[in-house]
Every structure is written in C-alpha cells, then in structure tokens.
Image (tube, rainbow, N blue to C red; front, side, top):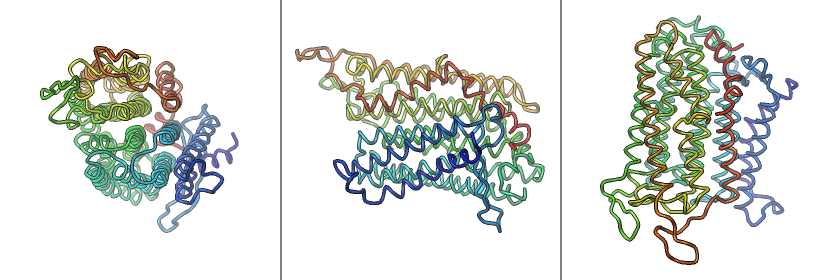
Length: 545
C-alpha cells in the first residue's frame, strides 16, 4: 500500500473518533433523526466506530507483513519545538493488533448500545464519551512521542470516569472516584519517569530512544525512571497490589464500560512496559524483572483464589419460594466482580511473560493481551445480558440451591457463557491457551542473568493458577448453566423457573466476531505471533527503526 495512504488511514483511525465525539454533541439534522434525537445519536456512534474499524482493517490489510518490525505509516510533524515534542505516529507488529482490537470492541459496544440504550442521562453525552475514549485509546497505541503517549494515556481517564459515575450501577460514585484517584496518582508518578527519560536521553522520540537502548542514561537514571514508569503503568495493568480499584469499577460500570475497561484500557499498561521500559531502560528492566515476576504470580494466585471464593455458594444463602436470597445480595458472589478479579489473574500472566525478558515470554504476553480482550469482552457482554434478563448478577440469587439452569431457560446464552468460561480457563484450541503457555515457557528459560530457579518457581505457581482458574470457571458454569429445568411452555408446570429470553439478533451480531476470533486465534496462533515476534526481537535487541 502507498505510504501516503497508510499515513492517512492511521491519522483517520486516531482523529475520526475525536471529531465524531464533538459532532455527537451537536443537534442531529432533521432528516437523520429517525424516531428521535436519541436514536440519531446512537446511530451516529455506530457509524463513526464502523468507519474507524474499516480504516483499521484497511491499515492492517496494507501493512507490510514481511517487515512487521519496521515502524510503518509514520507521520512526524513538529509540535512544540522548544521541548522537541513532535506529533509522531506509526504502527508495527506490536501496536497493530491492539489498534484493530480497540476499533473492533468499540464498534461492538456502539452496536450493542444502539439496541440497549443505557439507563441514565441522555445518550448524547454517552456516545460523545465513548468516542472520546476510543480516540484516546487508539492514540496511546499509535503515538511515538513520550509526551503524546502520556497525554493520550490520560485522555481516557475522564470519559471512563463519567461512564461509570453517570451510567453505572450501585455504588457507582465510589467506584468512579477510586478509579480516577488510583489512575491519576499512578500517572503523576509515570510522568516524572517519562520526563527523566526524555530529558536525560535528549529526545522524547520513542523510536530514537528505543534504538539507543538506554545508552544516554546512566544506570541510576534508568533505575529511578523505570521504577516511576512501572508504578504508573502497573496501576493501569493492573498489577497486584495496585489492583484494588478494578473490581469496584467493573462491578459498577455499565456493560460497555466493563467491556472496554477490560478489553482495551488494561492493555495500555502492559503495552507501555513493552514499548517503553524494555527497550529504553534495559538495565533497569533486568534489575526489576524478578520483582515484577513475583508480583505477577502473586496476582495470578490471588485473583484466582478471590474468584473461587466468589464462585462458591454463600453460607448465608437460603431458599425462599424457589429463589435464592443472600444476606449480602450483590456484595459477595457477583459475576461482574468475579470476572474483574479474573482479569487480575490473567494480566498476571501478561506481566510474567514481560518479566522473562525473552522473545518467547514477551510474545506470549502480547498474545495473552489480545486473547484477554476478546474473551473477557465477550464475558462482560454475556453477564450484562444476563443481568438485563434476570435483574441481578449475584450468583446466589441466580443459582439458588440447584443452579440457574441457563442451558434450559436460554440455551444459546448458556452455551455462549460456557464457551467464554472454557476459553478463559485456557482450553487448548482457543485463544486463551497460547498466551499463558508461552508466558510459562518464557519463565522456564528466562533471559541471561535472571535467576532460573526463581523463575521456575514462578512458572510452577503460575501453573497452579491455571488449575484454580479451571476450578472457579467450572463452578460458575455448574451454578449458572446447569440446574432445574424451566417451566414447560403452555403447561405452567415444571421443576424450575420460567424461561429467559435467548440471544437476540443484535446480540448475536455483537458477540459472534469475538467468538470467531477466539477460535481463529486458538487454531492459528501464527497469524498473530508472525506479526509480534519480529518486532519483539528488535525491541529486545535495541529498538525499532
């Protein structure tokens, strides 16, 4: 593809959502209102995100797959000459999959929202915030200047705060404040590290800094800067023990907010580690790698045990008229909270892969990033649909003493939930398997200079975490999908509860791409690894030219 066309496509991917966000706040033209202004603005969101997705797919199609390590579609324009800050955009094999994933998930969220209008204030602000969030996230993966990366990184915080605070569920204000405070404090620390790297390195250009491989930074400077950057990125990742904002944010967020938070925003932290810390501060990365791996495996075990505790029946559950009631309704076994804690465990595998400092481990981390976005995005869609139908995501209320019988009450919904569960636990042949396996392979043989006995211990603990993941996911499937049969149609009799509405057409349209890509990535991992591996090899060897 022509270089100019690539430049235009990448610029469109970043800028169109921002323009669409501003346009969403304007009055809809009379001929485009349809049944009213609310429908018009929701349709506007679908249209803009569809155009952005088409541009991202066209960019991926025109990408030079024979040279994925080379930065492509570059635009480099001076912006603030006094500080040598430039508008520098580009993509390589590391960032391209994340760009496409972001565009896809945002489009599916806009499509889902068109048919499931969010409860709360006017949809006009909702669509504007959704598009602003997309623009900031896409920019984070496309910019190649440290200061622009920071600005894009911060750009997503305000729209996500308002999406949680204005359209969320119970305790949304508390959850939104915890989200914004944790991430802003982390960002302040990260900014200090980025400034130190840029000022000491003589440039804020990420390509040049990565190519220099930290040669312009002293060992002490690398240690201080990398520690600040890692702390800031670890909050967003999220890494234990900086994860505590995540369960509350997910539980309170609307469905599409949870999908984007898990599927896209968490990836910004781990992407920053691969793009900034590993190539620009290699000595510090080597020093901190064992500690990062230790925190990662603690997160894997902790997240899995928390999920198992949420999945098991509450001892306070009692049967009342065929339904289960708990003294702590929604506070303990909430499905959204469970999936949020599962993200802590899954992102632990990503961090473990990065900490190995090997191509195998880092490729596994990037693969697990994409797999987690697909699978967890699907799970949050499904749990949101279940809440719309049943009015709750509390496992004790859903399951009662025998199970929620989703297979019988809504068989397609139950089948999709079971599919998402087995994909999340890492079943071979699905996307969740390869990233975790490669991360553990990387820990089996870490980079030179790292303690192999320590990383073998981390690998064993991570392997135990996969068993815990299988345990809690199978418990969820047992309690939600199995159980008493529904009341038989037309008879009013039966052993269980009334049937639920099964998967609607628009839900099938929003979820089927995630299912298909989960299967495709599981059966053909080379499609993704072929993109990331050359770029990772070059980043670890000394930058991306």
